[in-house]
Amino acid sequence: MRLTIVGGGGFRVPLIYRALSAGAFAGLVDEIALFDSDPRRAHAIERVVADMPLPAGATRPRVIIEAALDAALTRAVVVFAAIRTGGAAGRVLDERVAIGHGLLGQETVGAGGISYALRTIPDMLAVADAMARICPGAWLINFTNPAGMVTEALQPVLGERVIGICDSASGLVRRAAAASGVRLAEGSMVGVDYVGLNHLGWLRRLEYDGVDHLPALLKDPARLASFEEGRVFGAGFLALLGSLPNEYLFYYYFHAEARRSLSSAAETRGEFLRGQQEELYPELLSSAVPFRVWETARLSREEGYLAEARGTDESRDEGDLTGGGYEQIALMVMRAVLTDVPTELIVNVRNNGAIAQLPADAVVELPARISRTGAVPLAVAPPSTHQLGLMAQIKGVEQDVVRAAVHRDRDSALRALSLHPLIDSAHVARRVLTGYEEAFPELWRFW
Image 1 (cartoon, rainbow, N blue to C red):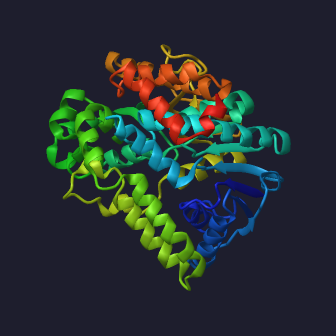
Image 2 (cartoon, rainbow, N blue to C red; image 1 turned 90 degrees about the horizontal axis):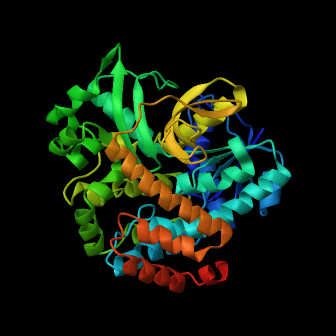
Image 3 (cartoon, rainbow, N blue to C red; image 1 turned 90 degrees about the vertical axis):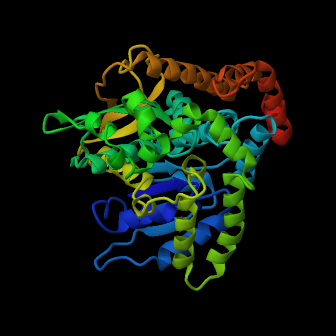
């Protein structure tokens, strides 16, 4: 069976390959097709996986680089998509245009996330259309950011056969469980109450043996200090919330601090990654030890993740740098849809009444049961007024962004920017949209 990776030159592809070669996911597929808009990147990643050390008995899937999307999708049973329209340079512009207008410069949150989605959704729709034509029975597991908006835009084409994934929610649950001494069964969300949208959600219950361990965790500063979200938000603020927020809510709850930190930094996250990639990929193509080069870059890359939320003197825990993130989630979804052995994970899925106050066709991020028939949201408690208010406001923005990208509607894009809570003026929204149109001339043609 063939797994096709669209964006096959992506930095994290070796993590997928390693998981498919040894361990619980070995043997799920025997062939991986890599397709990338820059074939050199795919060839660099091919060298990394060929050089990757694996345990005895590992079974290496065959890797094929395809030059055309149609060829890559032929015979695919599952498609992973992780593309970045505009590349690293586009990410830099997403960040810098926002910063230049006094806004938060982050690639998936606020103005930068809207710009990213406007460019990306049309390209992902082309992938979905090609799948519907070439491999209509295949599943699309979408990693492409902004994951919630992209997944929602693709559902009219692929229906239930597209599932969006992100590792931030599952990582939060995993870290909170470890800090609480709770042993969660793999593939089960029993006792976990998490509600939200992509990059905007809250863990509200962590039950084990009939006891909710979250209240005790929220009252224990020492245990909160043992993991990322506890340190980012602080014990006092978490006690006020009565829940554990997804790490991306730092940009909402500490907006002013995040904006100052990002705007005063010598380089944006995108600029760091662009510089790293400009050096890395040529080295991967020429080095005698490409895996070692890649692994060193991976650790450096992870160390800088959400640095603005941690402060200048704090580094990430070793546990946060060991991998095992989104590739594990993607492969658990893949195993469930191919083998019909159900699993429960937090994914981006069609609401279908799980949150009664949001539209049925809205994509939300919830625990879901995944099997050969797709992902079905599990029951969650109703969101609090605060949670619902922020979710509804952001969902309205997201739906305007999807409308703008799908129907080439500039007014919807402007409305999304004007109504986003991290953009504090409709005048600024109009100026920043013009700034993105100047930075990305294709948007003029897009409208």
